[in-house]
Image 1 (cartoon, rainbow, N blue to C red):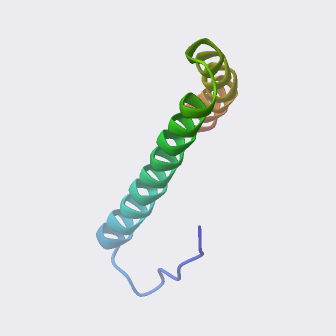
Image 2: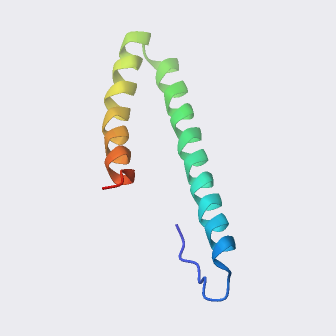
Length: 71
């Protein structure tokens, strides 16, 4: 993500901008995931595809869980 200078922007708009950027990033990750899953299932058998998707997504899910968890 790019750094944005919020020095002259009200905090409410700053919050909306951060939320919007987070939403865009999440949408891009979701689109990438869907495309990768589609490619894998098209070129491999279903059982191999499920194994690959679970094996690839589990570490990402764990990383995102611990990164976004409030302590």
